[in-house]
Length: 387
Image (cartoon, rainbow, N blue to C red):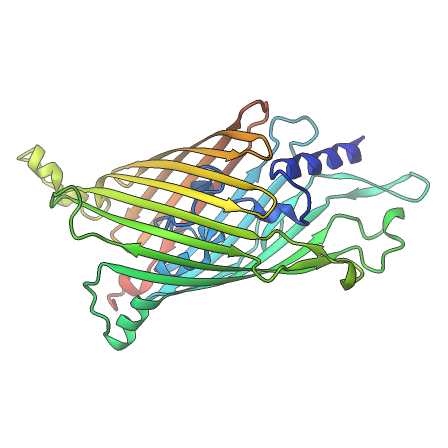
């Protein structure tokens, strides 16, 4: 019975992405709770999320990251389904950025593996006559190794050209993913005919991001903003995964993602004009903006189906964030809203941390997937006064 439930789970997870032509469909799941809040697959152009998990949606984001960052997340896709509430996806990554150069490496997640691990739940391991000989958990693990480069930032940092006052820049990124699929236990009747029941494959991503920073927003000296556009090419070289025969490999997910994003900020000094006796100097170390509003729009084309994501985020005093998003997959018949909350804290530009919790409510589905993440950012170079 447990095995049948696991099979049903895999079918349901495939139906959420409308088609089952691809292997390792779990690699399409967003590991960032903050980006998830912008409509499940949001985040292609969201450069303001400093958690390294955000680089999943576009490796070019690493060109905008500064200092050391670490982040982990836990995603539960079926918390409301009996006997499937032990299905999880767990991720853990670190990144480092300096002068427009950034890289990301996998770290140990809560499954004890490096990178992202999709656990499909515990089930009985039986021999050829149907006797239970143990318990095993089918799982797939993906390890992402990514690099990003902000071209104009690098040229300025090392060659002092172009000038810093330019109000635009561009970043490119590359992500190489090593995938290990262990859906069949090492010793059971079903795998005796396999020399190795483990599947191995490689996946690639190529990303590009452009940012425009206007000199003035809303004709006010207290407002600022940035606008971005991003493109992420998923497996442009048609990557595959194989188990025993390379000639019988299965195609990994492929497609393109486009994203637009914008952010408008209201500076804390605005409070001094509203409250004439107010002194905002005490807030200077912990708060840059009174209010920040971020909006994103994302479109993904996976060849056999397409998805649309959009969302908005409102952040107060750089502490409390609330996000509301919408996700649509017409071919898969999946539409619904995402809701997300974030709690953050930062001290100057030396230290930053944030906790995020997001959920998805789909039309006609009783189940409510949920994801949480936590990230920290530490900039030792600036803390020591070298930059």
